Amino acid sequence: MPHIPVEYTPPFLFRSGHLATIYHGLFRRVRGLDQERERVQLWDSDFIDLDWSYSDSPTHKVVILLHGLEGNAQRPYITGSARAFNKAGYDACAVNFRGCSGETNKLFRSYHSGATEDLHAVIQHILGTKDYSELYIKGFSLGGNMAMKYLGEGRNLPPQLKAAVGVSVPCDLHESLKRLLSRENYLYARRFLKHLVRKLKEKQKMFPEELPDRLLKRIRNLKDFDDLYTSVAHGFKDAEDYYEQCSALQFLPNIHLPALIINAKDDSFLGNACYPFDIARINPALYLETPGYGGHVGFYGEQNITYSEKRSINFFEDLS
Image (cartoon, rainbow, N blue to C red; front, side):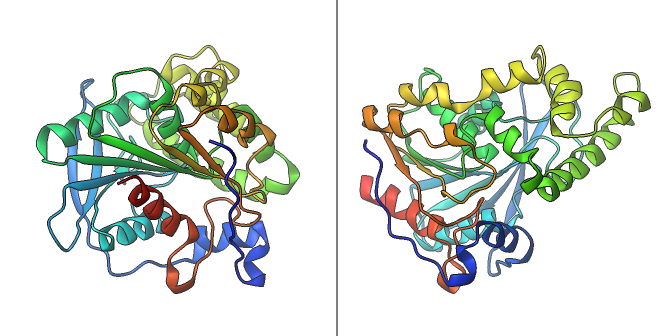
């Protein structure tokens, strides 16, 4: 599907990508949402926690929400989406990736951008325990990469899965990493790394031999983290191998279900390869919107409803 022109013009202050990113990451508040937690036991003895919220009336539709790096199901971009979908007649299942629900997961591994086996397990659990005829996915940043990779891997997708939306998707993980390590994004990268290392120190208590102090001291940036932990814990040769295998970009041509990527042009986390114009032109199932504004997982909207929240609902509804 060709690149879709879009008219999104936020108030003047939010035409700064950094301000849009920071406001929605640190200052946005979402109220009026009740979530119920469900713990799902995984095939490898680990667990994932799901936070459910429900439409006011019975529905046959559910949306799975996937957070970004070091996020969780209580981040405003997740709760805002859940609230908007609930009001539109969808139940919402907000996934906390392994180790992201406030409790360290049991295994040495945790989560990463390409862990579609965990997304598949959540989908199978939902379809095996609840009666939904329509299932949708919405992922943010890391979660958006995971969603697009899942659709394009060539696995047999359940007929209930109808479509997906990815917001601020780092389609090329290596390019996104290089952007994060740039001077412009120094504060963001430092914040991410601080949270990741803090979690690793908690995991060190369970796996002291695999995570000695000398190893943790070598982690000075996000690339070090992926070289010394992510790749080792999840079976990749190194960080480069992880980025190469898990970037959604290579899977986009194989997507056959309707999929929408919303990547703002002023998103400082995304490199040129994260705007897959050429692939969108030749794949009729892939829709690409690149608003001039929005930052990273920003997209300010009036009445505390973001552009991406409205657009996701409209995209799913237009398919019905």
